[in-house]
Figure 1 (cartoon, rainbow, N blue to C red):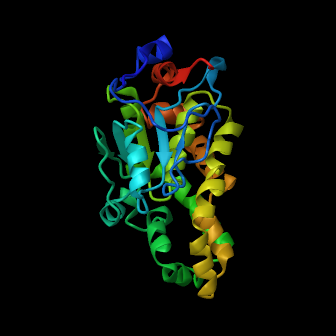
Figure 2 (cartoon, rainbow, N blue to C red):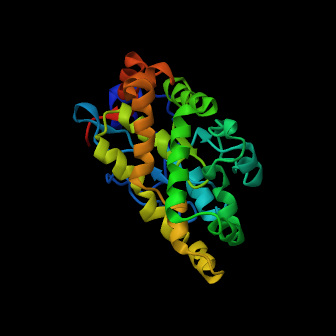
Length: 299
């Protein structure tokens, strides 16, 4: 079965390198932020269908965000393979990648962009895998952290997404891929799919003219998708004598985290547009090209 090119808007098909022999098997949905169809990849979602610039919407089936594949089962692996992925962008550190290597998907190329390489292994987002794997680690953390101090650390990590050279290099690479000749669909992820992945998604949607309120709405969906799937972690932590309230700011997301990143952008560069231009090499012409590639008319 081949792609029906007539059904793809001309401005979309003319610019994006599709793989014509693949057709996504994911159930169709016009709802932005629809729940993951893959139970073992709870924080997976299509970035399509959000309202963007000029009355158009973000093209569905082009860019997916996700958590890692640590619990991926055979059914969901087959389902993900059915998406016809052509690029998988891994935003994790070397330690994370070695601990939980990505599976291979037919026809897909992996692109590693280590956002936190310059953090020296100390950044909390890069260590959440240990919390997920061993509640004792979380218990040890509870002896040193309070919910508020955890939030302070998380907001600091989001400022690092703006300041660290490795983060700047990685997010620049992310947009370079989206502007290049590499084919889509593309999936990008980190460990929990909420922080590094969340900032990449937020900047991408912002470039496409998605309203800031919808950018936050998309970001906060993690609390409805990932956190319930991690309920056993909370339960085991509580059973071990830990305070589950500590885990919520670590394993969920809060608007203040994204606030911290956007505020840092304004502090250092004056505006998101200047940050995009000066740091990520996404100038006005590149932003227009991204909108031409990844926005389509409403169905």
